[in-house]
Length: 512
Image (cartoon, rainbow, N blue to C red; front, top):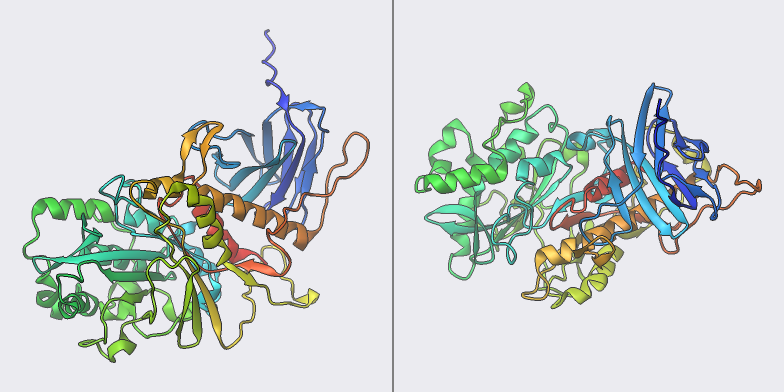
């Protein structure tokens, strides 16, 4: 019998392993057969030494009788990112592989959390300023590549919601008395009514009934359409969409829509697919009851099952119940592309904003990333040692002062012709050559933060090298320091390109 081929050796050094999953995982290096067992409170290291050749193939196993073989290599396509999300089967775990240096790599393990309903595991008392909310900039801008497209057409609206997006950014113009999505002057072929229907179906479903979605609505055609008409059309949908007594009022928006537009709109939102399984208690709610329309940031318990209006229209709130106080969260200050950022106050919450998009050239991508991520850093309240939560317990939010601070960051940017949306978000290149976009840089930053957080939280437990010596785990400066936490609402172009960035944002909500 011919013996099985020996795995091709490649030079490897220290592999640090961080486990955030609910499983105790044993990691075995196939060639050297060195292993370590890691849990949520126990980091691990396999240290064969810098001069030892070891296989890039590992096996992850657990007492639950499953075993996952993985191969540590980054994809050849795309820019030369220092990390990658590894596809593993079966799907009990989500695994990331990151390079710290030529001789130090990291394996970061999470449970395969259901992102379509992650908010159900957060307490009702959590103020939404304390929740890391992934979002998409120009959420339904699927057309007009390379100048106006901001999301991959495969990542339709329903799929975004199922992958954890909880902030939807919608830009609308009025065409034949219908509200249709636009990105600047470029038509995006999605009806506002279809967007709302998709969000209603999701929030009325079994998976979405405990979630909430922030929806920013902005008027794109303010130069030619009176703000009062735009506001009235939005109000008709919000107050009456799908209600038996309001069908005629809301229906006037779609009377002149061509069939081709209706088809494209359904494809963009996912409305052409079977809707999620409805929840009987939620499906009977009227349209207006599906919205949070108070001008303040709610707690999660107040907002579950609702769309939180974030109104970038309306001027003085004419026609809305309670005027401006009935238009949802209403920004009072939004300067155009201010590099240094800005702030505005909504009742007890101060919004710290980053929306610098006119960056002129892709060479400014590193600076764009630094500014868009720095705004997410928040001081960490000091807690006594005894208040640390038990492993696998539900997350407990840090106590907040009466005045909240809510970081809000657009990681997107666009300046034609040298800073196209896809270039800034995704970068360009192949294998070892190219340029990382903001998304890859954000993923690298979040992985460094998670590893350092685990070091500071749990200490060090590792396998000695051949000399019997233990090496301290690597802590990257300025990442996950003991006095910093990452919080805020993060809006991205080309969500999850590269794969796994949105999941990392969600997982920040479950650090203890």
